Length: 408
Image (cartoon, rainbow, N blue to C red; front, top):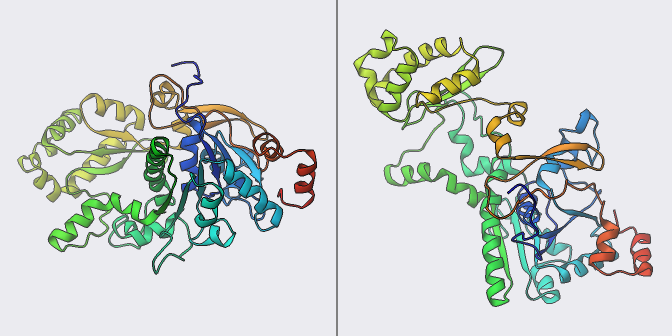
Protein backbone atom coordinates (compact mmCIF):
# COMPACT_ATOMS: atom_id res chain seq x y z
CA UNK A 1 0.00 0.00 0.00
CA UNK A 2 1.14 3.53 -0.74
CA UNK A 3 -1.15 5.34 1.71
CA UNK A 4 -1.29 4.99 5.46
CA UNK A 5 -4.29 3.19 6.89
CA UNK A 6 -5.98 3.95 10.20
CA UNK A 7 -6.75 0.26 10.73
CA UNK A 8 -3.51 -0.57 12.54
CA UNK A 9 -3.48 -3.88 14.43
CA UNK A 10 -2.57 -2.45 17.85
CA UNK A 11 -4.77 0.65 17.68
CA UNK A 12 -6.31 1.13 21.11
CA UNK A 13 -3.57 -0.76 22.98
CA UNK A 14 -2.07 1.43 25.73
CA UNK A 15 1.54 0.92 26.84
CA UNK A 16 3.50 2.39 29.74
CA UNK A 17 7.10 1.91 28.62
CA UNK A 18 9.50 2.32 31.56
CA UNK A 19 12.34 0.57 29.69
CA UNK A 20 15.57 2.01 28.37
CA UNK A 21 18.64 1.16 26.26
CA UNK A 22 17.74 -1.62 23.78
CA UNK A 23 15.52 -4.64 24.43
CA UNK A 24 12.55 -2.92 26.05
CA UNK A 25 12.41 0.08 23.69
CA UNK A 26 12.73 -2.13 20.60
CA UNK A 27 9.90 -4.34 21.87
CA UNK A 28 7.68 -1.32 22.54
CA UNK A 29 8.57 0.08 19.11
CA UNK A 30 6.83 -2.91 17.48
CA UNK A 31 3.59 -1.95 19.24
CA UNK A 32 4.00 1.80 18.72
CA UNK A 33 4.74 1.61 15.00
CA UNK A 34 1.75 -0.71 14.54
CA UNK A 35 -0.76 1.58 16.22
CA UNK A 36 -0.44 1.33 20.01
CA UNK A 37 -0.30 4.46 22.16
CA UNK A 38 3.07 4.12 23.88
CA UNK A 39 4.13 6.51 26.63
CA UNK A 40 7.89 6.24 27.03
CA UNK A 41 8.71 7.16 30.63
CA UNK A 42 12.24 8.50 31.00
CA UNK A 43 14.25 11.00 32.99
CA UNK A 44 17.23 13.27 32.55
CA UNK A 45 18.72 12.00 35.85
CA UNK A 46 20.21 9.96 34.26
CA UNK A 47 19.09 10.13 30.65
CA UNK A 48 18.75 6.96 28.61
CA UNK A 49 22.29 5.81 27.86
CA UNK A 50 21.52 5.68 24.13
CA UNK A 51 20.68 9.39 24.14
CA UNK A 52 24.27 10.06 25.18
CA UNK A 53 26.46 7.80 23.03
CA UNK A 54 25.85 8.99 19.46
CA UNK A 55 25.93 9.08 16.55
CA UNK A 56 24.75 12.67 16.90
CA UNK A 57 23.18 14.67 14.09
CA UNK A 58 25.85 16.90 12.52
CA UNK A 59 28.25 15.58 15.21
CA UNK A 60 26.70 17.98 17.73
CA UNK A 61 26.11 16.11 21.03
CA UNK A 62 22.79 16.45 22.80
CA UNK A 63 20.15 14.26 24.47
CA UNK A 64 17.80 14.88 21.55
CA UNK A 65 20.33 14.45 18.75
CA UNK A 66 21.23 10.75 18.89
CA UNK A 67 19.84 8.54 16.14
CA UNK A 68 20.81 5.39 18.06
CA UNK A 69 18.07 6.28 20.54
CA UNK A 70 15.87 7.50 17.72
CA UNK A 71 15.90 4.20 15.86
CA UNK A 72 14.47 2.33 18.86
CA UNK A 73 11.83 4.82 19.95
CA UNK A 74 9.74 5.88 16.97
CA UNK A 75 6.01 6.55 17.27
CA UNK A 76 6.21 7.08 21.07
CA UNK A 77 5.25 9.88 23.42
CA UNK A 78 7.94 10.94 25.92
CA UNK A 79 7.01 11.61 29.55
CA UNK A 80 9.90 12.94 31.65
CA UNK A 81 9.25 11.63 35.15
CA UNK A 82 11.37 11.44 38.30
CA UNK A 83 10.19 8.22 39.92
CA UNK A 84 12.02 8.76 43.21
CA UNK A 85 9.77 11.58 44.39
CA UNK A 86 6.21 11.05 45.68
CA UNK A 87 4.57 13.08 42.93
CA UNK A 88 6.47 11.18 40.25
CA UNK A 89 5.33 7.90 41.76
CA UNK A 90 1.77 9.22 41.83
CA UNK A 91 1.88 9.98 38.12
CA UNK A 92 3.41 6.58 37.39
CA UNK A 93 0.62 4.77 39.23
CA UNK A 94 -1.98 6.81 37.40
CA UNK A 95 -0.29 5.85 34.13
CA UNK A 96 -0.36 2.18 35.13
CA UNK A 97 -4.06 2.39 35.88
CA UNK A 98 -4.53 3.60 32.29
CA UNK A 99 -2.21 1.07 30.61
CA UNK A 100 -2.84 -2.36 29.13
CA UNK A 101 0.89 -3.14 29.15
CA UNK A 102 3.72 -2.11 31.47
CA UNK A 103 7.29 -2.70 30.29
CA UNK A 104 10.55 -2.28 32.22
CA UNK A 105 14.15 -3.31 31.56
CA UNK A 106 15.89 -2.47 34.83
CA UNK A 107 18.13 -4.76 36.86
CA UNK A 108 16.11 -7.41 38.69
CA UNK A 109 14.23 -5.94 41.64
CA UNK A 110 14.68 -2.29 40.67
CA UNK A 111 11.09 -1.65 39.62
CA UNK A 112 9.87 -3.23 42.87
CA UNK A 113 12.28 -1.07 44.88
CA UNK A 114 10.69 1.97 43.24
CA UNK A 115 7.32 0.85 44.59
CA UNK A 116 6.02 -0.42 41.25
CA UNK A 117 6.44 -4.19 41.53
CA UNK A 118 3.88 -6.53 40.04
CA UNK A 119 2.13 -6.99 43.39
CA UNK A 120 1.50 -3.24 43.52
CA UNK A 121 0.70 -2.83 39.84
CA UNK A 122 -1.78 -5.71 39.88
CA UNK A 123 -3.70 -4.03 42.70
CA UNK A 124 -3.90 -0.83 40.66
CA UNK A 125 -4.85 -2.61 37.41
CA UNK A 126 -5.75 -6.33 37.70
CA UNK A 127 -5.86 -6.84 33.93
CA UNK A 128 -2.45 -5.35 33.15
CA UNK A 129 0.27 -7.29 31.34
CA UNK A 130 3.55 -6.48 33.09
CA UNK A 131 6.79 -7.30 31.32
CA UNK A 132 10.25 -7.25 32.90
CA UNK A 133 13.33 -7.92 30.78
CA UNK A 134 16.91 -7.98 32.05
CA UNK A 135 20.13 -9.88 31.41
CA UNK A 136 19.58 -12.93 33.63
CA UNK A 137 15.92 -12.77 34.65
CA UNK A 138 14.26 -11.78 37.90
CA UNK A 139 15.22 -14.86 39.93
CA UNK A 140 18.23 -17.09 40.58
CA UNK A 141 21.82 -16.65 41.82
CA UNK A 142 22.80 -14.39 38.90
CA UNK A 143 19.65 -12.26 38.85
CA UNK A 144 21.39 -9.23 40.35
CA UNK A 145 23.94 -9.05 37.52
CA UNK A 146 23.57 -5.69 35.82
CA UNK A 147 25.03 -4.95 32.43
CA UNK A 148 24.55 -4.68 28.70
CA UNK A 149 24.15 -7.04 25.79
CA UNK A 150 27.94 -7.36 25.49
CA UNK A 151 28.00 -9.04 28.89
CA UNK A 152 25.06 -11.31 28.11
CA UNK A 153 26.65 -12.29 24.79
CA UNK A 154 29.86 -13.26 26.56
CA UNK A 155 28.07 -15.25 29.27
CA UNK A 156 25.87 -16.94 26.67
CA UNK A 157 28.94 -18.22 24.82
CA UNK A 158 28.97 -16.11 21.66
CA UNK A 159 32.46 -14.75 22.32
CA UNK A 160 33.86 -18.28 22.48
CA UNK A 161 32.71 -19.05 18.93
CA UNK A 162 33.28 -15.70 17.17
CA UNK A 163 36.76 -14.56 16.19
CA UNK A 164 39.96 -16.45 15.41
CA UNK A 165 41.37 -19.29 17.46
CA UNK A 166 44.83 -17.72 17.71
CA UNK A 167 43.49 -14.39 18.97
CA UNK A 168 41.44 -13.15 21.94
CA UNK A 169 37.66 -13.50 21.56
CA UNK A 170 36.25 -11.04 19.05
CA UNK A 171 32.59 -11.35 19.87
CA UNK A 172 29.70 -10.51 17.55
CA UNK A 173 29.20 -6.91 16.58
CA UNK A 174 27.41 -4.62 19.04
CA UNK A 175 25.41 -5.68 22.12
CA UNK A 176 24.32 -8.84 20.34
CA UNK A 177 21.63 -10.08 22.69
CA UNK A 178 19.91 -6.69 22.41
CA UNK A 179 19.13 -7.54 18.79
CA UNK A 180 17.78 -11.03 19.61
CA UNK A 181 15.76 -10.69 22.80
CA UNK A 182 13.19 -8.16 21.48
CA UNK A 183 12.04 -10.57 18.75
CA UNK A 184 11.16 -13.22 21.34
CA UNK A 185 9.69 -10.70 23.75
CA UNK A 186 7.52 -8.95 21.17
CA UNK A 187 6.00 -12.26 20.06
CA UNK A 188 5.41 -13.29 23.70
CA UNK A 189 3.80 -9.95 24.47
CA UNK A 190 1.52 -10.23 21.43
CA UNK A 191 0.43 -13.68 22.66
CA UNK A 192 -0.30 -12.20 26.09
CA UNK A 193 -2.39 -9.45 24.49
CA UNK A 194 -4.36 -12.05 22.55
CA UNK A 195 -4.89 -14.04 25.77
CA UNK A 196 -6.09 -10.89 27.52
CA UNK A 197 -8.43 -10.08 24.65
CA UNK A 198 -10.04 -13.51 24.93
CA UNK A 199 -10.07 -13.94 28.72
CA UNK A 200 -9.62 -10.51 30.29
CA UNK A 201 -6.68 -11.87 32.27
CA UNK A 202 -3.45 -9.99 32.75
CA UNK A 203 -0.14 -11.64 33.55
CA UNK A 204 3.50 -11.13 34.44
CA UNK A 205 6.24 -11.91 31.89
CA UNK A 206 9.84 -12.33 33.09
CA UNK A 207 12.39 -12.48 30.27
CA UNK A 208 16.03 -13.43 30.75
CA UNK A 209 17.82 -12.02 27.72
CA UNK A 210 20.56 -14.64 28.05
CA UNK A 211 18.02 -17.43 27.65
CA UNK A 212 16.62 -15.88 24.49
CA UNK A 213 20.13 -15.61 23.06
CA UNK A 214 20.90 -19.29 23.66
CA UNK A 215 18.46 -20.30 20.93
CA UNK A 216 20.90 -18.83 18.41
CA UNK A 217 23.57 -21.25 19.63
CA UNK A 218 21.38 -24.32 19.16
CA UNK A 219 23.74 -26.12 16.73
CA UNK A 220 26.71 -25.65 19.07
CA UNK A 221 24.73 -26.72 22.14
CA UNK A 222 23.39 -29.77 20.34
CA UNK A 223 26.86 -30.71 19.09
CA UNK A 224 28.23 -30.61 22.63
CA UNK A 225 25.33 -32.64 24.02
CA UNK A 226 25.74 -35.34 21.38
CA UNK A 227 29.49 -35.45 20.74
CA UNK A 228 31.04 -33.79 23.75
CA UNK A 229 32.88 -31.32 21.50
CA UNK A 230 33.20 -27.73 22.68
CA UNK A 231 32.93 -25.36 19.69
CA UNK A 232 35.77 -22.87 19.29
CA UNK A 233 36.54 -19.76 17.30
CA UNK A 234 37.31 -20.56 13.65
CA UNK A 235 37.29 -17.17 11.98
CA UNK A 236 34.99 -17.30 8.96
CA UNK A 237 35.24 -21.05 8.47
CA UNK A 238 31.93 -22.94 8.34
CA UNK A 239 31.49 -26.73 8.54
CA UNK A 240 28.84 -26.74 5.82
CA UNK A 241 30.36 -24.22 3.38
CA UNK A 242 33.64 -23.78 1.51
CA UNK A 243 34.79 -21.31 0.41
CA UNK A 244 33.17 -19.14 3.08
CA UNK A 245 34.73 -15.72 3.72
CA UNK A 246 34.78 -12.03 2.87
CA UNK A 247 37.20 -11.27 0.04
CA UNK A 248 38.94 -7.96 -0.79
CA UNK A 249 37.67 -5.90 -3.71
CA UNK A 250 38.94 -2.93 -5.70
CA UNK A 251 39.06 0.26 -3.66
CA UNK A 252 39.92 1.02 -0.05
CA UNK A 253 38.58 -1.44 2.51
CA UNK A 254 36.00 -2.87 0.10
CA UNK A 255 34.87 -6.48 0.44
CA UNK A 256 32.46 -9.09 -0.91
CA UNK A 257 31.32 -12.16 1.02
CA UNK A 258 31.05 -15.52 -0.78
CA UNK A 259 29.54 -18.68 0.71
CA UNK A 260 29.52 -21.93 -1.28
CA UNK A 261 27.27 -24.55 0.33
CA UNK A 262 26.88 -27.08 -2.52
CA UNK A 263 28.94 -28.61 -5.27
CA UNK A 264 26.60 -27.02 -7.82
CA UNK A 265 27.34 -23.58 -6.39
CA UNK A 266 31.06 -24.34 -6.65
CA UNK A 267 30.63 -25.16 -10.32
CA UNK A 268 28.75 -21.88 -10.78
CA UNK A 269 31.55 -19.98 -9.06
CA UNK A 270 34.15 -21.72 -11.21
CA UNK A 271 32.28 -20.64 -14.36
CA UNK A 272 31.95 -17.05 -13.07
CA UNK A 273 35.72 -17.01 -12.52
CA UNK A 274 36.30 -18.06 -16.14
CA UNK A 275 37.21 -21.67 -15.34
CA UNK A 276 40.81 -21.00 -14.27
CA UNK A 277 43.07 -24.10 -14.28
CA UNK A 278 43.59 -24.08 -10.51
CA UNK A 279 39.81 -24.43 -9.94
CA UNK A 280 39.56 -27.46 -12.22
CA UNK A 281 41.43 -29.77 -9.82
CA UNK A 282 39.14 -32.80 -9.20
CA UNK A 283 39.65 -32.73 -5.43
CA UNK A 284 37.89 -29.33 -5.31
CA UNK A 285 34.67 -30.83 -6.63
CA UNK A 286 33.64 -31.98 -3.15
CA UNK A 287 33.08 -30.07 0.08
CA UNK A 288 35.72 -32.15 1.89
CA UNK A 289 38.24 -31.41 -0.83
CA UNK A 290 37.54 -27.70 -0.74
CA UNK A 291 37.89 -27.63 3.04
CA UNK A 292 41.26 -29.34 2.71
CA UNK A 293 42.41 -26.76 0.16
CA UNK A 294 40.84 -23.75 1.86
CA UNK A 295 44.01 -21.64 1.97
CA UNK A 296 44.62 -22.12 -1.76
CA UNK A 297 41.02 -21.25 -2.67
CA UNK A 298 41.00 -18.16 -0.46
CA UNK A 299 44.25 -16.90 -1.96
CA UNK A 300 43.14 -17.43 -5.55
CA UNK A 301 39.69 -15.95 -4.93
CA UNK A 302 41.22 -12.86 -3.35
CA UNK A 303 43.40 -12.36 -6.43
CA UNK A 304 40.25 -12.40 -8.58
CA UNK A 305 37.94 -10.34 -6.35
CA UNK A 306 40.52 -7.61 -5.75
CA UNK A 307 40.20 -6.61 -9.41
CA UNK A 308 36.45 -5.85 -9.16
CA UNK A 309 34.22 -3.30 -7.50
CA UNK A 310 32.17 -5.00 -4.75
CA UNK A 311 28.67 -4.26 -6.06
CA UNK A 312 29.61 -5.17 -9.64
CA UNK A 313 31.18 -8.39 -8.38
CA UNK A 314 28.15 -9.23 -6.24
CA UNK A 315 25.76 -8.74 -9.15
CA UNK A 316 27.96 -10.80 -11.46
CA UNK A 317 28.21 -13.69 -8.99
CA UNK A 318 24.55 -13.62 -8.04
CA UNK A 319 23.56 -13.70 -11.71
CA UNK A 320 25.64 -16.88 -12.03
CA UNK A 321 23.92 -18.49 -9.03
CA UNK A 322 26.70 -17.87 -6.52
CA UNK A 323 25.63 -16.80 -2.99
CA UNK A 324 27.44 -13.52 -2.47
CA UNK A 325 26.98 -10.05 -1.05
CA UNK A 326 29.00 -6.86 -0.92
CA UNK A 327 29.97 -5.73 2.58
CA UNK A 328 27.92 -2.57 2.92
CA UNK A 329 28.47 0.49 5.08
CA UNK A 330 25.49 2.31 6.55
CA UNK A 331 25.82 4.87 3.75
CA UNK A 332 25.58 2.03 1.21
CA UNK A 333 22.40 0.76 2.85
CA UNK A 334 20.74 4.15 2.56
CA UNK A 335 21.31 3.89 -1.21
CA UNK A 336 20.60 0.17 -1.52
CA UNK A 337 18.10 -0.33 -4.39
CA UNK A 338 16.36 -3.27 -2.68
CA UNK A 339 15.84 -1.42 0.61
CA UNK A 340 14.73 1.66 -1.31
CA UNK A 341 12.22 -0.39 -3.31
CA UNK A 342 10.70 -1.77 -0.11
CA UNK A 343 10.74 1.65 1.65
CA UNK A 344 12.70 0.27 4.57
CA UNK A 345 14.02 3.70 5.54
CA UNK A 346 11.39 6.31 6.31
CA UNK A 347 12.40 10.01 6.39
CA UNK A 348 10.62 11.86 9.21
CA UNK A 349 11.01 15.41 10.53
CA UNK A 350 12.43 15.41 14.06
CA UNK A 351 11.88 18.57 16.19
CA UNK A 352 15.61 19.13 16.73
CA UNK A 353 17.47 17.06 14.13
CA UNK A 354 15.31 17.92 11.15
CA UNK A 355 14.59 15.23 8.56
CA UNK A 356 16.36 11.97 9.37
CA UNK A 357 15.87 8.39 8.11
CA UNK A 358 14.25 5.89 10.46
CA UNK A 359 14.35 2.12 10.05
CA UNK A 360 11.08 0.39 9.25
CA UNK A 361 10.37 -3.28 9.91
CA UNK A 362 11.61 -6.55 8.48
CA UNK A 363 8.30 -7.43 6.89
CA UNK A 364 5.43 -5.94 4.90
CA UNK A 365 1.86 -6.86 5.86
CA UNK A 366 -0.85 -6.29 3.27
CA UNK A 367 -3.64 -3.87 4.10
CA UNK A 368 -1.77 -1.24 6.07
CA UNK A 369 1.53 0.62 6.41
CA UNK A 370 3.27 -0.13 9.70
CA UNK A 371 5.27 3.05 9.89
CA UNK A 372 7.18 4.35 11.81
CA UNK A 373 4.33 6.79 12.31
CA UNK A 374 6.20 9.54 14.19
CA UNK A 375 9.85 10.46 14.78
CA UNK A 376 11.43 9.58 18.09
CA UNK A 377 10.51 12.13 20.77
CA UNK A 378 12.68 14.71 22.45
CA UNK A 379 13.15 14.05 26.16
CA UNK A 380 9.92 15.06 27.90
CA UNK A 381 8.45 16.43 24.68
CA UNK A 382 4.94 15.18 25.50
CA UNK A 383 4.92 15.45 29.30
CA UNK A 384 2.19 18.07 29.52
CA UNK A 385 0.15 16.41 26.78
CA UNK A 386 0.29 13.03 28.55
CA UNK A 387 -0.69 14.50 31.93
CA UNK A 388 -3.60 16.46 30.50
CA UNK A 389 -4.97 14.36 27.65
CA UNK A 390 -4.17 10.81 28.81
CA UNK A 391 -4.07 11.03 32.60
CA UNK A 392 -6.70 13.74 33.00
CA UNK A 393 -4.87 16.18 35.27
CA UNK A 394 -6.56 19.57 35.49
CA UNK A 395 -4.62 22.83 35.56
CA UNK A 396 -4.28 22.80 39.34
CA UNK A 397 -3.07 19.20 39.40
CA UNK A 398 -0.68 19.86 36.55
CA UNK A 399 0.78 22.87 38.35
CA UNK A 400 1.24 20.81 41.52
CA UNK A 401 3.06 18.02 39.69
CA UNK A 402 5.25 20.47 37.79
CA UNK A 403 6.13 22.46 40.94
CA UNK A 404 7.19 19.27 42.74
CA UNK A 405 10.05 18.68 40.32
CA UNK A 406 8.60 15.36 39.17
CA UNK A 407 8.73 16.25 35.47
CA UNK A 408 12.45 15.80 34.92
